[in-house]
Length: 123
Image 1 (tube, rainbow, N blue to C red):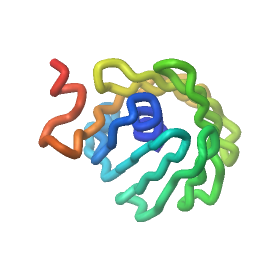
Image 2 (spheres, rainbow, N blue to C red):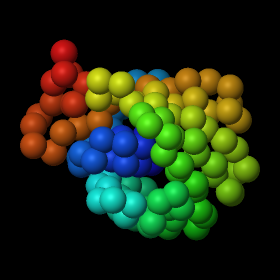
Image 3 (cartoon, one colour):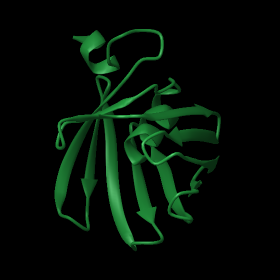
């Protein structure tokens, strides 16, 4: 969810799916951002997420997540787990650093107008 929200809010482009490189699996997550209004759907969990940035509400976890934009990065805070993350967008790829786990995660975003990811289309 954070990766899709980051990509949509930073680039203004729609997300039609996410590939999680760490788990080596495709996730059915979609997101779109217009101005400060973000809306998304997590098809794997069957729940909506969204709201007015920097606050988005995850209906599945019933919690708010802060997503503050800073150029091509966001600083995130999950109120339920009390953990921070940092995410950045580069060439269609979103890298998320989870401060709670002390680890980086990488995600490709699917372009809804193509059968390719934004990252693979850029190369």
